[in-house]
Length: 407
Image (cartoon, rainbow, N blue to C red; front, side, top):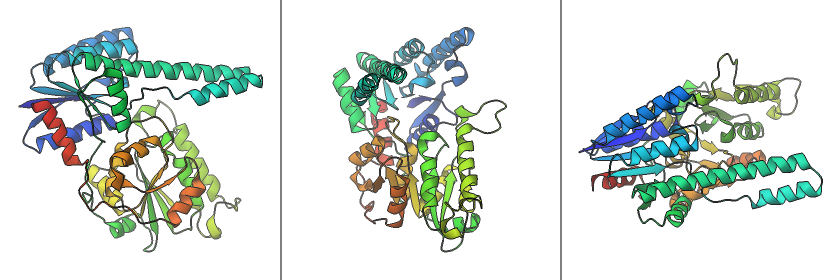
């Protein structure tokens, strides 16, 4: 039995990484899962000629998956087109190619939470801040358009009797309410299980030239603004000198531009480190002992084996994310499974993950409050319990996909 997994295979992105993990895990159970690549160079283009080539490419993908016993489509709208019309047309071609199709919806938002924004518009108008009010109105319109588009994808899938997979109970409730479909399943993103990573703390300390008594803090994943690196650096600056920060991740490939000396966000991190390390700045050098540039290590991208090992080895794993409306986080899932001590912002995606897996309970802090992050690190309460089998695991994820595509 041959199963196709459609995704941005071989690209440096979360969707492709998850798809490859899924393929490997299905194959490990004695089934045959095949990678079906979507060519982003074509699908993400707005050039008229390339858009036509992209449509031809999608039809070729459809022809290939038509011959398979089952197919799963890893869906993030931006992977399949640069406009709603292109995306909806191409998605329809793919889901109608094989009657045994499931679609995993990533990064989903369906309902409008802009009441606070509307109040902001009224407040700006009352204070005659017309430009600010117009900007907020434009933001509200764009948000509502996005939500409408997201709902249209879910409705299209339900009309075509496609099995739907989402990552949170919140998304599950939303999709069921919108589509009235009973063919919706929920499972958080999983890349591993507790104890899959080996704790090699002393080896990593030696590799990173840290001292025996140093405490290692880890931040993982692409270096993107929503990951909260600035909050992490500010929190590190409040901690004693023996706390060291390891940034295990690289600049997101999508942010790389031709002839750009350094990415603006990455540069802002470097400037902060340089500023706090300056001898002219008394603030930021804790007790005057060790400047922050001697306490931060950039590791770039790690192999899966190294990532799991470091995640299991660090004394603390930080997730200082900003709120983005994301439905899940692969990095968060890995850290919650492997790290001894996790400290996460009050990002809603983490709320939803802990809602499904209460054993993931950890220290939380308000988004952007680096003082609280530092305090929670110094006074961490040991209450994580991952000893018993979890309701949602890497194995249960694999079984769900196999059951969906082989029955």
